[in-house]
Length: 261
Image (cartoon, rainbow, N blue to C red; front, side, top):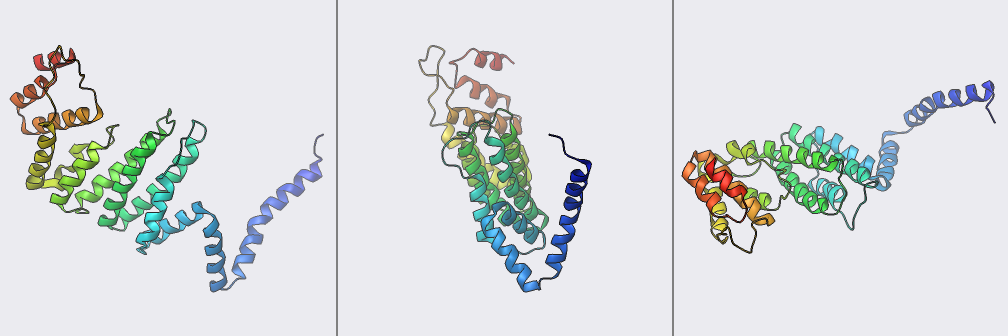
């Protein structure tokens, strides 16, 4: 059954009046009553709470505990998510990323570095349990990684401490979200050497694999360490080191191609 023109006009008029009615109501409240109203609503609305926290952070009003809880609620995941539920999860994660970006704008480098590192770790764990066929959550994690690198470049984490924490974070990153290149400035010469020592120490624990080896060098840890060793050798422009890295794992034909190159 179609609506009459009169009914349609009435609906449009009501919609137009709604903002005015709400504005009139809010303007009639005292400041104390308005604050109480918003806070009560925020207790039951995580989206509103996260938005308010971003606004507070942008004004230099910091609440470390509230920020931590926001990141935890946004990224922590129990169980698995199918393709249809993933967008909702990404949307709440993006709100937490907005908070991290607000920290950058407020020059809160330390908090931005610490919380973005935490968000990355939670995100890596969550990636195992969601269907991210569209790559949306991967893009969200890339935003977090960019924030982390930026905050570290501004001294958010002391360089020598960063050498250890960055190595541990890279070892937990199976999707290559974090780019070591982004931390050259933050590490500096001394911390880069410490980072190199961390990588080499773990690399030397890996067994050499021959062409006839029953083992295959495709484990996550070996893959990550090999990538880091290649990066460090390229940084030093050390061709002999690159060859030695490839010779450590001859269990697949690609190694011989790399050595020849």
